[in-house]
Image (cartoon, helix red, strand yellow):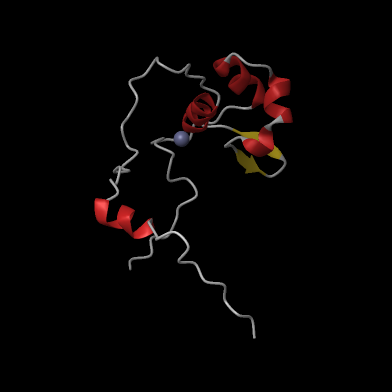
Length: 108
Ligand SMILES: [Zn+2]
């Protein structure tokens, strides 16, 4: 088993550091700065000292988190992977018991 060291910023594809503050991020996302502040614990971001910063990848993740896709817009991916197992006639017969064959177990 290969244990991969997880990089906190695996998702980040930035080749150079370019961070946005609350105001800039809100402007880019077209959302309220207040909403970012209120939900910051649930949003990907950087915490540098007492400041919060976002790179474009984090903004893209926020975008993804907040994306709403009504059913039927995208073709359903068929990844259920569940095969309907047909019950064989034999196992069905196994459930059948002759009437009155049930005997009471004596408790002791
Ligand atoms: Zn990035």
